[in-house]
Amino acid sequence: WLRVMSYFALPAVGAPNAEIARRLEEAGAPTAGRAKYDRAGKQATSRDSRRWHARNVNRMLANPVYAGRVAMGKWTQKLYLGIPHEKNSPEEWLLVEGAHEPLVDPGDFDRLQREHEERVARRREALAATERIRELHPDRLAGKVRCGVCGASMPVSYTHLRAHETGRNLVCRLLLEK
Image 1 (cartoon, rainbow, N blue to C red):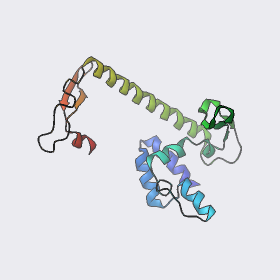
Image 2: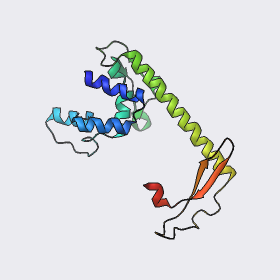
Image 3: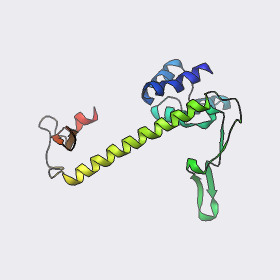
Image 4: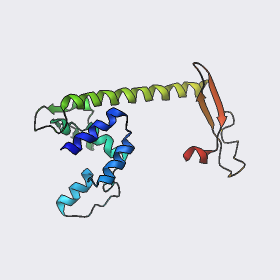
């Protein structure tokens, strides 16, 4: 249990989910998918169910079960509409508090959720600002400029210099992917 609590403490000190996934992988901690297959005595069919990834950590950190809560109503079936399974938004879930002993302090869990929502909101704001900049300054060379070394396309890369100032550079797409 102490191990689980220590992984929930990592985001508070700024550790990204990829770093937490790396630590879980090194510790040999089973993913939820791998544990499920192990309990059934079967071999995991999906590569993703055997290894830790940032998205697995994100799901783990958002799972209310660790705070002693059981979430009901996560999914809805509407067979009469031809929709076999539909995921409900977290606002629609029914959370049962104190369903079992929490592995993580519920207050710490709630704080972690708020911090995560704030980071997501800041990221969405930054993306919206980038979109506004792209609308104001369209890339007129899109698809027309190629790297002289490798031949890959060179899209415009925007840099925020100061408030209301933006720099634009052409960058090789292969360098962006590294």
